[in-house]
Image (cartoon, rainbow, N blue to C red; front, side):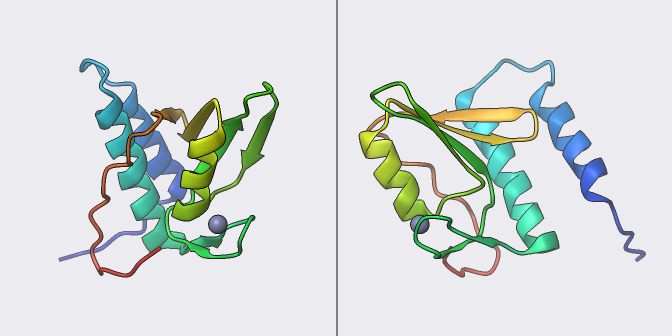
Length: 121
Ligand SMILES: [Zn+2]
């Protein structure tokens, strides 16, 4: 069986096409697309460091936090703990990857992401 190298740009186009597909919008569908693409990017490029606490971040997804005073803060990524801390105090938290974005609902935990090797982020 042949394996071929697929560029990040082609994969991003693929996931953006899925995100903009004809099926009805579902927040969990969008979340699943973001999580799937982030997991794929982790396998291709590895993770990153949380800009707040320097913990390793497996799923590098940009985060926009809108605070109670209407100011906004952008992060290249956040670890799960810092994301939950922002979620607890912010007016809204939006995860964005390519054309797909997902607003994290208040007081609702993020769905668990299936991991292929069981390592924590
Ligand atoms: Zn952190």
